[in-house]
Image (cartoon, rainbow, N blue to C red):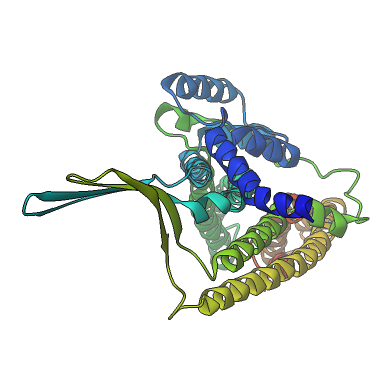
Length: 473
């Protein structure tokens, strides 16, 4: 029994000693948590991140970006430039420093308090001195350090999530820009051909070989093509500027080049097996929610531990009086739980904990749903794009060749020729859009598995392209 009592007495002292040891070890890390963020990002995007913390780092990043811009951008090169050059991401990394500072602060004890009192009555002088130390803070230091440590880990996940989201947005902007440029190039070709046809029709009409109606139809087709060219030109500028903002480029770097055509469709597609389980393991928003719930559980434990007593200060005190020997002792300051028994704080902490649990479950359910939807969009977009490239566009070309033969043989009218030309233009534009949409759907699928989801809401596939491909009468 005596041994057990001694062990019980030694336990607070052991906790206090451990807390002092932790307080002495609280310091900043050499990388500020960025190595973990870089590992998370590389695992999901294939690219690392870095923080420009000095002029040398900024110069090295600028040199690397300049080297990438000497060649037409690839999707991976665009992502690499964005991760190295986007200032918004660099600003987001500052949150890591805040979280680490909170962790270091949590590992340090409150400064001791010192009080001094001097009372004089006649020839007598009383002097009281005391030093108070936050004993509750010492006992709960490991718990508070654990909470802030989990929050620091959560901050790393959030920083990685922003980097992965930037990579996703950059890839989508890249495919939008390339698709818009390809559409602009085709619109230019159509306009040139329409201009030549309109000029020929005008000359034929002038010499009486064409009717005024046929000449007006050719002129209207040219006018429509000119309008489409203007729209395509603006869309290309807007898509390129969106990409430029994500890349963080300005000045002379704005002259970067992008490919003239979208990448070819892949021969093999991603398998659907185990994608939900992958999302549960890989998705950063799910991991952030789990970390948040864990940190909230620790905070709940701290609230329960300090709910009854949250102020307990111990300290050394002495008193000296004129003509009397010096008196030494100790002083205790304890907040009496007369009005506040801590029930409200405990109830609030429990409610916050239940809220974090429900949010974690909601995040996991949404993640599973989003990855299923993203995969459906991915396969459907591929099937549509492949159908346009293999079926619709060749079929339209064959029809156009037949109509042109009939027109040359005076078996088809100008009206039929123009209608077919519009249908062919629409089918080619729809094929470009379908190819672009596939690559965006592929990016959304990777984001649904490895990042934070597509973030674009429902991926409903509309039938606009099919409607545009129909002949106009």
